[in-house]
Image (tube, rainbow, N blue to C red; front, side, top):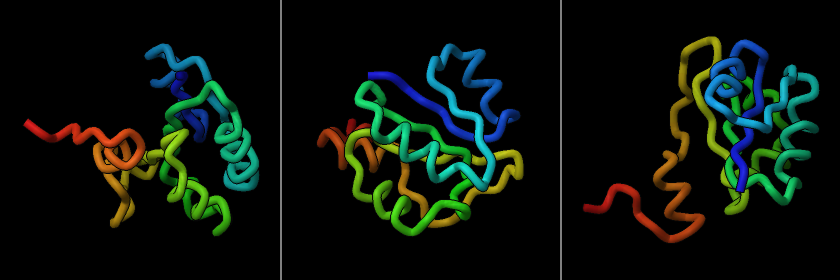
Length: 105
């Protein structure tokens, strides 16, 4: 499984430097299409999404993200540096996807 990152060019620089092979530079106008394309890619297991793009996603895509167990889609703070309240944690998404609690001791 591959990790993919989608966002504005400034957000993706660090992921590229860290070795993430699949990246998708986008704008608010084309984020919906590019994210859905990544979600359809069989080799992608985790998508890291620039949180600043979330408001531009369609309701259908947001519902698809919530229901998806493969790939897992998680958002990170974008260039605004602010996080949106109420987002599901990575550990909660992993537990939902594969049944393993990452926080268990």
